[in-house]
Image (cartoon, rainbow, N blue to C red; front, side):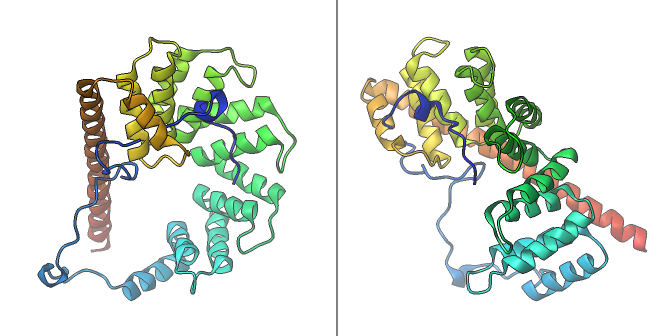
Length: 312
């Protein structure tokens, strides 16, 4: 995968980052509530009578795919792609993704591009990857727009073009795609790609990225507060965002040491304030994410009910 240096952390200096004294609820994944202890299997409630078995789900997906449903094709491709190593079949996965792409489904084009990019089930071919990503981007898929921005930036599978790279980066950011928001924030704060330095805009972009659950945007907000980039130094807020970056699974090395170093600059009461604010922010984001998921599930159920009604 392509990784442009997107962290202020890595670009400005080597930090050191430590304990979320959200106390190791720390490794919570983006937009997911903390894990709860597993229930005693013997005490588990029986499965609903109408719950489908894995075999039934697969049968239904194959039936839908045979009828031309591209989303069923994507689902089947994903099953082959993410199965246990002993049964994983990238060739079969790619075949299903190609079928979805033939139906002009943006996600199908994107998955085909991803497979060609790294060589899964097929020999790596960056030109073919670019072409598939471009088709997905033309259908408005933000992930594909972000990918094209990277390919144009490095001239991979296409001639290098910083103007095109910035154009696609802005398109993805306009759709609130968190990695693009973060990348554009870095572009603005470091005055890259012909842009003027704009710390205020960078802060706004990192904030949106953080609200989308992107840990690197949280990390960058912590750097802004810690180093006083476009605003006064505020180590309480810096610690809050460093704690959240770790809680949301930041892959950046040294996060733990940076947290320790930032915490050591604060009084105990200030540390507690940072921890309290971080916990409250995280819980609010989890609540919002759950509301969105519940609404989507309700809409899906209503759609299914409407379809059943039409069939009668």
